[in-house]
Amino acid sequence: MSLSWRERLDVFLSPSRVETLRRGGFLRQWKGEGASHPIQAAGTMREDWREPLARLAGLSTGEGLDMSILLSSCFVRFQVLPWMEEVQTAEERKSYAAIHFRQTYGAAADAWEIMVSEEPPGRPAPACAVDKALLEGLRALAVDKGCRLASVQPVFALAWNRWRGNLDGQGGFLAVAEEGALCMAASGSGGWLSMSNRRLAGTPLQEALSAVLDEQDLLADVPPPGARRCLAAVHGPAPSAVGWKALDGGWRAWL
Image 1: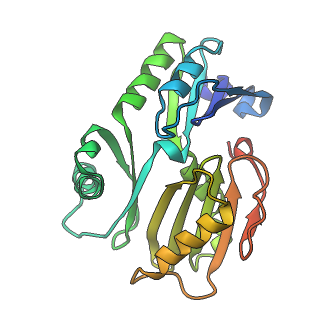
Image 2: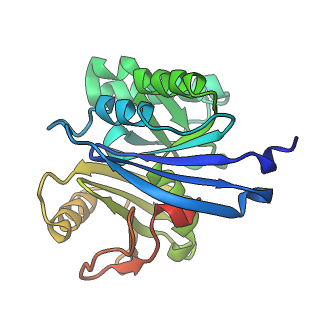
């Protein structure tokens, strides 16, 4: 049977809720009703994925599904790796990225699984790190539910793939806001420049955006003055932010 006929369960995992959307039919064109499952005992540590994972495990999902997981930026760390000609293979890229994460985060990075995007030669590459225990938990959960874990990726990656065209190939800023987190990437005509991922903890969005832009001004390589600034939101239309172009659409529209 072609995998395009298999039903799929799309899941967004965040510190405060688990959101699900079931779809199926030929090429998965049919969309069922989505559901939001709040986490009653959401902890104060927004990086803690254990309660969301337990909430997902407690849901009735059915068997024989492809399960695709989107991770909140709260559960992901990012780096932009400078190009090094000596780094060629996938394993070398992961080792190179691991050095950068350890330099930034210390020994905690030893417990993370690292993924590096493939970029054209000569260009910087984004990398992300996720707790190995979270990924192991998701794999075990899929087995317990009789599902196939089709993919796990940061919600920012999906947003970037959908909306990077708004930067018109010249570079600029793409920020993705969600409850409690703001992730922003800066790019130029030569590719990725930097990434910033911060917890909002009650900070107004406009203030957080300004703070990230101030940090960008301290970097040697930044998008040119007047570069486009695009703001997307995980749920629904982007909130109003002065100087930013709002991009419509919630996460379910991206899948």
